[in-house]
Length: 429
Image (tube, rainbow, N blue to C red; front, side, top):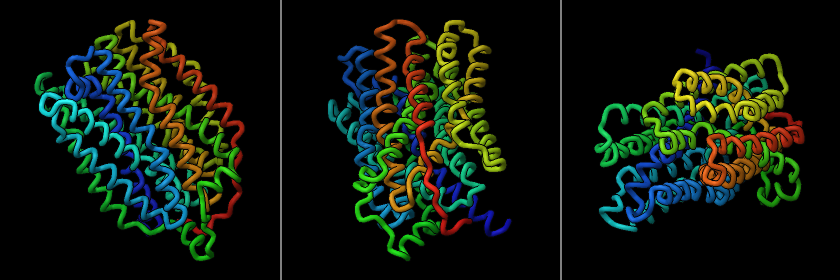
C-alpha cells in the first residue's frame, strides 16, 4: 500500500471511530430507554411518564451540544483541528463508562437520576465538537475526487455506531434473561463504549494536523472570533446548513433510534426482533451511502441530487413504513426497512459535505458546528418527545411519520438555497 493510500485510510479510521462512539453512546440510551426508565426513574411514576422523563434526559444531551460546539469549534478554528479532534473522543468515553457503573434509583434514590442527567450533559458537550471537527478534518485532508467517499465514510461510522449498538443490544437480549438484563446486563454496552474511546484516543494522537489549517497558521489567516464572523458574514450558509441538517437529524432519529422503542412499547414486538430489523436496515443504509459516494466522486455528480432523493424517500415512504407494523408480517417489515434504507442513504452520507463546502476554511469548523449541533440539539433531541406526543394526540400508528415528512420538505427547500464556497485547497493527500 502506498503512503498516500495509507494516509487516506488512517484519516478515515481515526475520524470514523469518533462517529461510531457518538451514535453508539446515544443509540444505547434510546435502545435501552425502557430499561433505563425502570432503573433510574422513581417507581412511583407511571411507565409512560417514566419513559417520557428518560426521553427528556436524552434530549438534554442534545440541547447542550451548541454550547459544547461553540467552545470547541472556536479553539478548532484558532488553534488547530487535531487538538480538538483528540479531546472530543476522550470527553465522550468517560461519561459512557461511568453510566455503565452508575448506581440505580433503588440504591441511591433520586441522586441516581441526577447523576445520569449530569453524565448526559457531559456527553452532549463533548459530542458538540465531534462530527463537525471530524468533517472539517476529513474535508481538508481529502482531494476533490475523494471528498464524498471521505465524508460518507465518516457518517457511515455514525451509522456503524447505531449498527454496533443494535448488534450488541441484540446479542445481550438474546443471551441473558429479562431479569438479568434489567439487573446488570444493560451495563455491558456502556462499559464497552468506554474501552472503544481509549482506542480512538490512541489512533488520533498519531495523525498530523490538517494541511489547510497548517497553511492558515503559516500565513496567519485564522479568524479572531470565528463565532461572530459566521453570524456576520455567513448567515445564509448558516441557516441553509441548519435546515438541511434538520431533515437528517429528525429523520435519522425517528427511523433508526426512536422506532425501536416505539415498536416494543406500543406494539409489543420483542427487543431482539426489532433490533434485527434495525440491523438489516442499517447494513444496507451504509452500503447505499458508500456506493453513492463512489459515483459522486467518480462522475462529479452534483451532491444536491442524492440529498433530494433522500428527502423524497422520506416523504413517500414514511407513512407506509409505520403502517406496515400493523401487519405483524416480519418479512414485509424487513423488506420495508431495506427499501427505505436504499432510498434514504444517498443524501445522508454527503450532507456534511454540503455543510463543509458552504463555509471558508477560517470559520469552517465553527460554521459546520453551529449548523450541525443546533439542528441535532433542537430537532433531533426533541424527536422522541414530539413523536410520542403526536401518537398520544392522534392515536394513529403513522403519527411519527408526520414530523418526518415535514422535516424532509424543509430539508429539500434548504438544499436548493445552499451556496458553495469556491476555495482553492492548499494541500491534499
